[in-house]
Amino acid sequence: MGVSVDSGDKKNVNVDVNVVPFIDLMSCLTAFLLVTAVWSQFAQINIKPKGLGKDAQTEIDEIIKVHASILITENQIFVGLTVGDRREIRNDGGTYDWQGLEDTLNGFKEMPVFADRQDIEIAAEDNVSYQTVISAMDTAIAAEFKDIGFVDPQSLSVKFKE
Image (tube, rainbow, N blue to C red):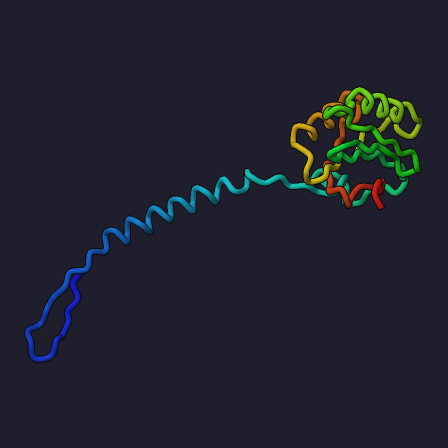
C-alpha cells in the first residue's frame, strides 16, 4: 500500500505504509477477546432466590411459613427460624463450633415442620472466608438439610441484625 505525498513543485514522494504490525495486533486482540468471552460465563456464580430456579415452580408455596436460616459472621454463627427461635454460636479461640451448629440444626430437624423438609438458607458477611461457608454447608448437609440456598445477608428470611 502506498501513499502519494504532493510536495508542491518538488517531485512526488511515494511512501509505503507497513500495515502488517497493525493487522498482527488486531488479530491478537480478536483472538484474546474471543477466548475470554467464552470463559467469562464460567467465572460467575448465578445466585437466585430460594425456590426460583429454572426447574422449580414460579411461585413459592405460601403454606410453608417457617424457614431456617444461618448467618455466618467473623466472630459467630447465628441460626434461627422465622417463628422466633434464634441461637448464637460463638467463635471460640478462632475456630467455629461446627458441632454446636450441627446439634442446633439436628434440633430443628426434629421439629414437625421440618420432618419432611430439607431446605435452609445460608448467608455470610463479606469478611468470612470461603472455606468457612463451605464448612457451614457441609454441616447443614450432615444435619440432613440438603437443599441449601446461598443468599445475601439482607435477603435472609430470619433477620438476626436489625
